[in-house]
Image (cartoon, rainbow, N blue to C red):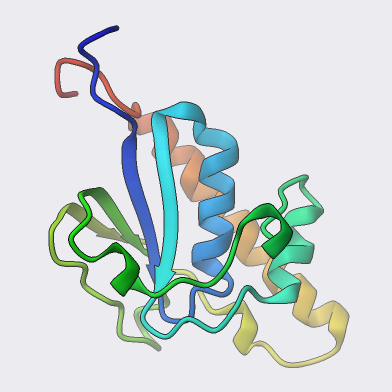
Length: 153
């Protein structure tokens, strides 16, 4: 439709923009289509975690630097119009950032897979578990939330 607004602008936020927010960005980009303009950022960006990249590759989504993914500061989005900010930190263990100017902000609590210690297999299992939890929550979000419509719903 000619008068339909652009895609819903979604920003996933966490502390380091290394795992949860990057996986959420990759998943929504893959599953949300053109109805969403998706980014992610952190309060203290560190770089995309190699195990996050590996876990996402297992389901056919590339969140590596070669695919254009990198850790970004939430300051890069300051002053930009954002329709929805989703914080994805574990609220019991971290202070989730607040993003001023967002039309709406919600919180999805996921544990930090990079905090898990153990063998490489145990650590990768933690990333897979969080990836799958984010995917399930995004699938629910997409079933409840049409990207855009011209009547504001």
